[in-house]
Amino acid sequence: MGAKVVATSVDPLVRLRRFRDTYSLGFPLVGDKDRKIGESYGTLKGGPSSSDERDTVVLGKDGTVLLAYQRVAAKGHAAQVLADVKKLRQEGLL
Image (tube, rainbow, N blue to C red; front, side, top):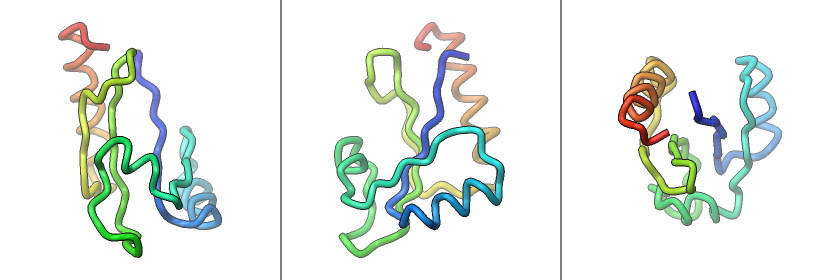
């Protein structure tokens, strides 16, 4: 569909690997322990000790943020992102 999924989290890499393996995820998980990615995209919600930093960002081909979801819950989230990405594609943004 012209979109690539990459997940980021401030969780330790060991926890990310376990999560990836438990759910057989087909996309990369990137550690953001230093919080630089979250700062760049403006998705950080908590302070330096917060571990509740699971967000989804959909980028355009030029790297601009087209969609951003904060406080992501697993249930139903993938379906919502897919529907929104399909809409972006229909609008010619992807």
